Amino acid sequence: MSAIVAEQLKQHAQTDFLPLQGTDYVEFYAGNAKQAAHFYITAFGFQPLAYSGPETGVKDKASYAVRQNKLTLVLTTPLRSNNEIAHHIYKHGDGVKFLALKVDDATNAWNETTQRGAKSYMAPVKMNDEKGELVMSGIHTYGEVVHLFIERKNYNGAFMPGFRAWSNPYFKAEETGLLYVDHCVGNVGWKQMNPWVKFYEEVMGFRNILTFDDNDISTEYSALMSKVMSNGNGYVKFPINEPAEGKKKSQVEEYLEFYDGEGVQHVAMATNNIVETVTALRSRGVEFLKVPTTYYDDLLDRVGKIDEDPVPLKELGILVDRDEEGYLLQIFTKPVEDRPTLFFEIIQRKGAKSFGKGNFKALFEAIEREQEARGNL
Image 1 (cartoon, helix red, strand yellow):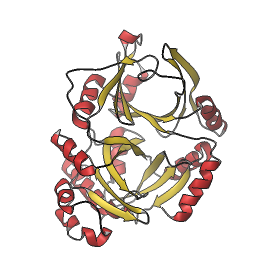
Image 2: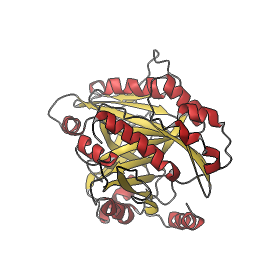
Image 3: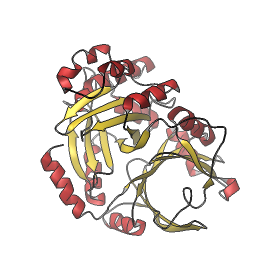
């Protein structure tokens, strides 16, 4: 990201009509939330936080909130077949339903976005219990994804009203160094990227800070295009991908086919020590994409001096890229479900503000090898 773009973001933050404080939580609809919560605890190092279900007065669903530092995931499952959550899972499989954004004023956030053309998901609602008051509102975005606006300045409970604190003394999983949501990537259909870029610009006041076309993100067989949208202060970033023409089926096309529509492709989770984090995740069974070892033959010639020892980076398959402001280290899991849809990125930023453009070719060739193994290339 250039100094000019950084200055534009700074100026924009000063006049931001939708100030966001970051990602409050990411909520998944899952076929079995109890087992999904166990997976994120034991494999990724999240800790039990809060529970909502019949025992707390909620009759149609059960939800488990898990947390690691500033990262909060909510896993929600339907308790009966004939409801919206069950229909969502039948169509899409397990996937992200809500990207909840932390705001100081959820009512104002809803007013500002709906006045600019957003379709309302829920008007502002005040939720109360003995721990205080939480205000929530929401708008629709691409596919069936919803942005919730969460105002919790007057709430001191474990998570939110309707939940009770949840702990399990038998969970012994330690944290793995995951810190917060760096960005969330959405996959949209053919020629839908620019309309959604316009949505984020006009409805939410975001700016397009980076653009990648099919020359940047392509291999011999497939291609995609992407634009990175950022809010005023840079705390929330949403890259948006769409397919591009290629000889064979791109990863975005595969996603759209198996997810049966547009949705969140991956959540990038930040760490301050990617070698330790990835080592811990691998020891718990998390599977990562692997690039050819030849990627590391000229690594330091490509990216310059780095603080890390290249040997463990090569052993773990961690990628490195540099921009004008520093460098980053990143790695991507394989899909975490049987459908080849949702996956996670682990990222460590050492000054870099970009998204690993120099790694795109190696990364997408690795994805294509997985696609070919599934028979979907």
